[in-house]
Length: 337
Image (cartoon, rainbow, N blue to C red; front, side, top):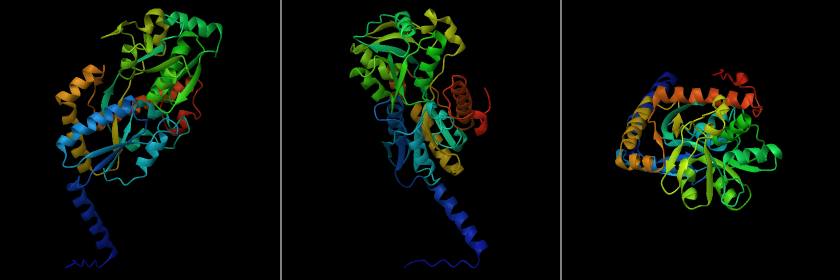
């Protein structure tokens, strides 16, 4: 028999809606969750979201299905899609620090405070060249780019991504001028190097390591102050060693993770935060991080929101100062770092 609920007034109807919504949040999750990654399959954000989502399932009664919606500006297509979904926690966005420039790049009209993020961590960026490139070290590449500005093609994921900003900062700090070719994600950028479309690529060590070990790419320098030793590759020097002046522009670090709309119920945030924290503590995730040169963060809640706000300020104003932003960050309410 169907239950008939009689509501005597608009006030009672509103009260009924609140009660039903509260009940739904308390029962969360009752069906599978979709994680929409804003970058292409195979890249660092995609891989980390798939691994963490799979581990989170151990602590949830439902599955987390990962899909990809790359494109737009700085992940704007995927973010716009998820932001347009109901604020019920059943649609997650898989994002990264590169998404914080979507506003100043003209990709969408929101700030990052519309999200409630969970930060997995990140892997440091480096600059590499194809195996047949004539440059044996970073100085040779920089000198060639200085001698013939714009003649060398360099790939990174989309305009405004951390890899793009690292490339811009490298060029600013060394005086090298390369032609930036944007791609939908790190994997397509690296594939472009494999097919000869470009000779230089800037992505993370986690993303490049297999290509480096296979001799497909040759590392010229880490875009962080420290050198790294990679099994099967050897020592990769810091770009700061050859160009100490890079400290004025670098390092710019990753913050890969996921998020839900900030206006989802608190009960939903609590459930997801608990599953996320437990997932990062599993042996599988710890081993994956070690194998892929990831530094795990685990920030959630206010700490994660503050981190993204800091990165939004840093990235937006860096782009502005480098002349690569379409909008003045102040018009979007983004404070200077």
